[in-house]
Length: 152
Image: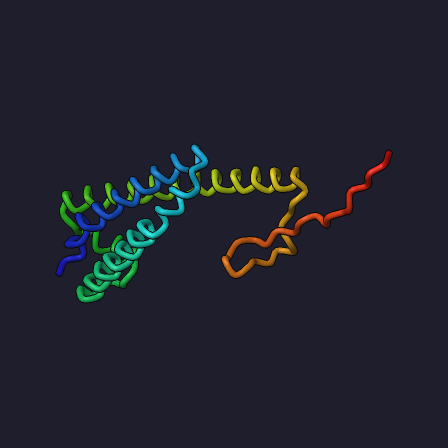
């Protein structure tokens, strides 16, 4: 098998991941965390499939005497046909797009977490000492209840 045999499949899965990252970004902008959380499994599936396809490509490189890595891919591409080079460069462009979307989504998520922490602090609630409960969520420390004083 040739190292470029999986490039179309990688491009297709990467396009699916790009769409999921765009959907995630829309969810984060809208504050729709429930919908955003629902995308996690699909994103993980895309990443796992991309990893599997890259492993197959690396195996093909190794069978041809190149290192089973991106460096080996670069060495193999040095002797490849022009259409293969275009396919590879298009794939790398999509990878850069996905990386940028993921970076921006991380920033949006951090901003959302900061706003949530501020809102909790304004309500007198705060996360405990960095520990998480059984649900995986930070445990909240509720302010102690003080008895009401009635005067009059």
